[in-house]
Length: 511
Image (cartoon, rainbow, N blue to C red):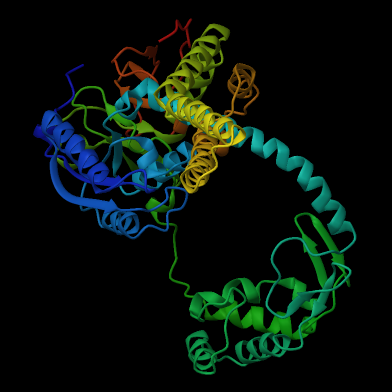
């Protein structure tokens, strides 16, 4: 495989984000962070196009002016890289920092941490995201216990979650009609049933300063969930629980159906046939032609019997006809890749290796955190307080000793707060947690779209497709090593019954 292009040859542009949060830091902290980021950019050939700096702003929330300004610029694709001194500059909580990374990635922006190796290292990124996913995994398991309580509420027709416009929670926890807003719901259903345009209704409600159920202004999209909500006819609904008469009705069934019918007839019937790009190509951005290394893009065609078929096709082949790579059937290649991923990552030795990798990086995070520094600071503080107390016990009670004691106690509170925040920012996962997370992929259904997406998202780096084999590389490995799988027949250009066949998944070694 040819080596990757450098940042310079790719013309990558970057923005810098810096932040300090307390009186223990100052503008010098900001300048130091920016200088480190500029030096990192110089070494890696990034062009800096913007600097965003929040002064005396906590990282526990994203309500930071410069941070929000940076996110808006990312949405406009003004840069491809965000440089930060450390992950705790993006957020005080590492898991939140990773979620912001995901948001930025949706706009084609990568986040690099200048003083943390894992920020630009495949194994490190994989380990950090695994810790985040393990936390979410166990959080969802805990949510099952909460769900049992919610289902018990549902069987008693009690309110679970937010209330639709027109209702309020009664003293017994059940639905009651809100006399102030229920007439608005009735009015909307009548006006829709009579054929009035939603834009006109929205303008009128806004002029009358009537708000939606969430307190916002009305627009055409505000009516969709309201018009589809059968609760207004008196049916209690929560997940799979439906109890007719379980709540007081605001409108009768006849008006509900009339409004719904009018809603359907008002919809544009332009979709005479399903557009190709409505089809979801799961390997987009990760499937490449093995010969010219261009992306394989989604394509479709109609067979001899009029049936629609979906393919991945080499971009060069499709647009320039400079590559002879044959198209490959979408469902077949996706099934092969997912089956191969599952076979590889669920091998016991690979699970052990990935678990070791995650735990190693967790230890690295702890070592590189401020925990040690803050614990030493706390010890020094306690020693200083003890000495002042001894002086007071010996009768040295002056305004100076009192002021010093108050100063030390305030410092202790701040250090304790910072220490707890730093510890909370590190995922609280054990080796057993991580191993169980990886083991959970054993029983996944390779025919499930959700399972396919999960495997591709967490483990797949890239797939290189040839006519006689594919090469799969993994998200936790920066090298070009991977697994190669032979194909029996990947020709799919004209024959309706042609598909990629799995010859043999072979025996995978650890990659």
